[in-house]
Length: 231
Ligand SMILES: Nc1ncnc2c1ncn2[C@@H]1O[C@H](COP(=O)(O)OP(=O)(O)OP(=O)(O)O)[C@@H](O)[C@H]1O
Image (cartoon, rainbow, N blue to C red; front, side, top):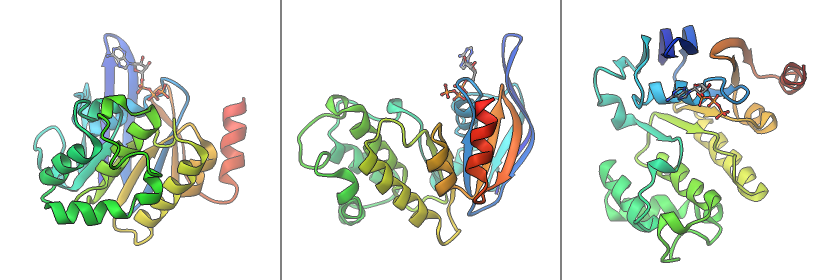
């Protein structure tokens, strides 16, 4: 369970996030949508203790994220390319992250074979530094690294952006597989309403930092969101 209580973030006098209460049960696939500047990344950054809230707190599986780092052992995330290390190759980066996650070389090799299709022969064995990969290929590395070491919580900020259509479809399969046993909590932000409604069982809409919709995904959700955003 991820519990958010009386959370706010202000820059100067400008409030960019204001969430009174939000509970994300364990095993839920949770989608966060909202227009540019709505506060999605701010929420994820607070959840990952990358920025401090002005008020309130987020508790990830009983650990208040800005009071202990223990949540890092079971939380995988990819927000943006600042999570990568540009002067490493993908293999070196996966070894680095895998090592942090308690995986040995054999574990890492076995883990990576699941993603052969997702990588589409563009990641492994190319002898390229991460900084020289295309934006989409950097994203593939970041997403896969976020899944290393059997995390209980996975947080992905706009995972579909910059990916080609084939890879987007493969990513949807990966996310659905990840969430099918309902043990892993997956949080995704997206501007792609079709993808997010397909992979998330719950969608929260942020507008100027406020929760304006909290929907259990159904066949009507995509239309509801499209009509909300077309106003
Ligand atoms: N360091 C900062 N100083 C001032 N304002 C900031 C700072 N960081 C973020 N903001 C503001 O906070 C608001 C929320 O930004 P955030 O990145 O969370 O939105 P978002 O929903 O992720 O948007 P997008 O869809 O464009 O990625 C924006 O108005 C942004 O300009």
